Amino acid sequence: EKDPLWVGQGTERPFLSAIEPAQIDVIVTKGESTVEVSGKVRHASTKKPCVQGGVALLPKDRSAAKEPYFEQVDASGQIRFTKVLPGVYSVRADCVNMISESFPDLTVASSSVNGVVWEMQDGGAIKGNVVDSDGIPLAGVQLHVNRSPDFRTVRQAVSDATGAFFLEGLRPDIYKVAYTTDLIDPMGESEAVEVRIGQVAGQVKIVGPWNKGKIGIRVRDERGNVVPANSISVACSGEDRGGHVIATPTASPGAFECTRLPEDTYTINIESDPMFEL
Figure (cartoon, rainbow, N blue to C red):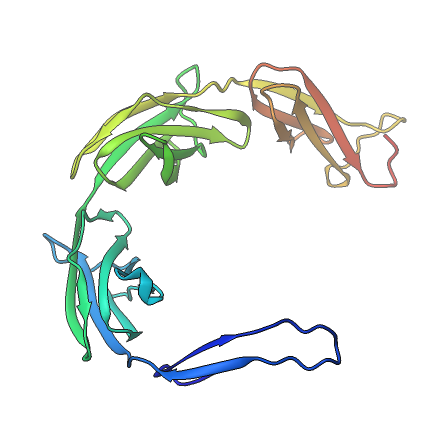
């Protein structure tokens, strides 16, 4: 391994056996020296630094066999590339809750490039709430913002205790909000939502296909004695839409519940400590 000033190019052939020597021919040529590139990422209007993001330098000349460079910003929005080869690079920046359309190409010559400023702006956002078929807010629903036309996931969130969600840092486009929980499969989608720069699209109301079905289970041994909850695990498995739901113990000894179940036919699965025969 040589100093970065030197570039090694070689050919190799595989070892044919454990004892046969192999020959690797290496030609070492003097390469281009590297320089430092540094700058900052900040909000275009407020000038507040980006504290969670990064910048990628992508070589425009792909025939030069140069690798792209990527670094993360620090707590003050500063970023530093220590060893960049001369050339022309396209720039991509990413910052949580900010977006950018494009940046000018960056030209790196034989001396360091310092003090570069990459400015970004607020994206659009989608807010809404998730309720069940009775209008009761649902917490813990996983939400995925999918962008047109392929509706690939670009942002994710989870509904809070009031069923609300807020997804920000979105580019102008048409989106759908897909939703699911660990209790239901498959997931569904909202209607198409248009997002614009600096605006909040809402109120998106998602009425999930969740019902309030419940199965109560009481577990006893062959003598009718209550089986301790810490000795068994209980689950409800639906044949179609119900999925696999772990039952939770209740205040009553030996009693469990599977809750928030959609309509389905369920099998009760019980696994126990070896001392209990089911």
